[in-house]
Length: 410
Image 1: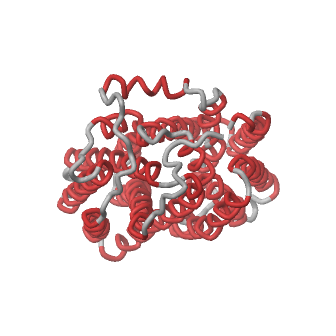
Image 2: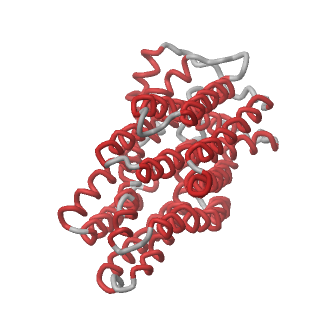
């Protein structure tokens, strides 16, 4: 297998490198959880209706625009500060400005200003995520990508607990401004860490850094000899089954009579803790076995998790808290799958265009996940949750068979 990205075996990451990889991943998920869980929940409790909240969900879809933002990061390199360090510092500073605006906004009275702050928050978070991904691909050597993925998944889950769980806890006890201020403190601490970080020069200058070339690379990337046709197909499909089921969690739990407090405890505390506990297993397996073998095993284990959702709909609805079992099991399999895919994405990203190549691949995967959520809620509304679980299981079996039949290509 060809090795792309930073394939230098002699490359040794410092403690400072590992610390920044962990905190950037954690902060990115913290911001996403703050927006998609914390902020949405706070606005709903304040009195926002579904029509108003739909605009905030729409803004959250900016994450799919990674393939648009990444060429800008490749083209405009802040060399004096560091290519990725510069973008990380700038985007985290804008995140802090957006949070500073939110502190002084009265949501019900200042809806327009609230939307402006949310646009700024999501846009800067998008740039931050692309820069963090580019840094990861550029400095992680081939042998450490599995472990690097494990570190980032664990950090991301901790970030989810902070941005979703802790923020809401602060909100319930101290109010809107204190919850927003907590995020502002996280942003300031990260800015301080980034300012003290010395970025290693591991990337080479692109032969062609014109914007037109960088944008057209979205099409040229998939035509490279080391990128089989089955790879973009796998990326598009791989998160559809889990995306369908995950998007049904909150409405299904509500329908079963779960309180908002118990839903938050399950999804923002126990679910991330399970992921944190089992994610290191992925790193151990990736050191002992190939990426392809581990991925195939995890894809099969996901099928078992989906089958438990189906079983619950038939025999477990009289015991509503039993649904926590398949939810936590799916979280574990997802936590095992992400480091595998992250390692494979980095393998296929060239060192010269680390940000762009990795962002292109993630954009395809995110599109599949968002599409799954869109379809899932409509299937549940029209035919019920059992249909969602059946469709997700069938697709998961198809993906597992597809991957198994073409694993030599990966």
